[in-house]
Length: 444
Image 1 (cartoon, helix red, strand yellow):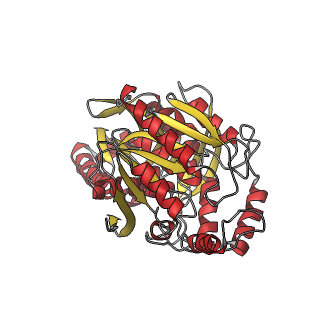
Image 2: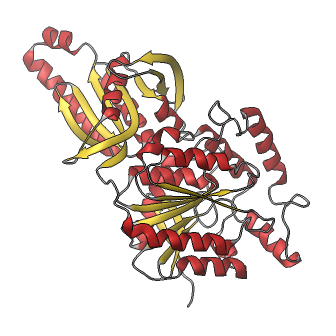
Image 3: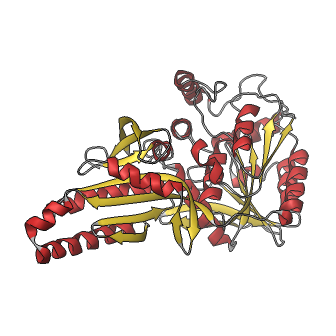
């Protein structure tokens, strides 16, 4: 059967994908680097692997934004992870699939985990190979590299990308070596890869893991080579309500492991899907609260008629910006708005725009955002994450947009900058919370 690589569109960004196989279930494969839909098909063993994954089901293979056959980006304009998460939904739409099990490896596991948490209705399950939730060394992740070690790694990547260090990979022959080098070069140039690495190491999804309620299979490198440490997989499995952890033995081939072993694990995972009852009444969301600073005093000063006119202008601006940034208005009480977003970067940009544009009315708006697991009740969201968002907003000053650390950790690559506001007690919320004031670079 002739191949047919197609393109999905996320606004003006094209995303290459290919569909093979047939069946009731769908597997969406999101590979890590190196990846290129065309070049990987030139290796017979890779073709056999993809055919195994497509046996008895639809297989959607896609190159993520910035790699392979999908649109590239400038190293100075690396998109945030939420853009890559949006891309998965666009690919599923274009391929005519309402729902799929998402299989991701290495760095792309962050994208898949965010997709599962934010869109549980579209994600039937996760298969994660060597996933990582946090890329920087910390008291909880002492096995990960320090910022200085990552800087050295990125410098090395810029100089050696497109080559293979002696002894790193065992090739069957010279032809396989040449194929692998073309695959590497066909994935992404070294500048783009290093810039992406910088985004990954600034992203941390540990706080959103409990919001994933789909079944999860985690396969980890049993020997812990490179950054693929088995403890990263265990950390994720410990925080997921429905995860199973297994290991594989790595090898020095271009695959790094036995593709048959992985395909067998995928088949077993699909066989067990029917026994799982997902929690579809919970979803990961970014909540936004805004209100006008000193509204009571302004209302008294202006009088009822003029104040109502001002509120109508404020409401019109806020609703226009919510539509622009794909926010959903959930409630409005007097001069305050409560909205939700499925991407934290869009939520921040919307809040900053609201604060800037309503300032032209002679008022100051403050805003607060938090990302967390929310309960869905009659189309509305509730739960602790909502209360945290409201408390964060209450800590903001005039014209300020405050966010929790969880929000900050999810928007690396968005261009949004943050000023540390230290540890804060939120009324009625246990513990101390790291808060940050968001702003855009001058001239943005």
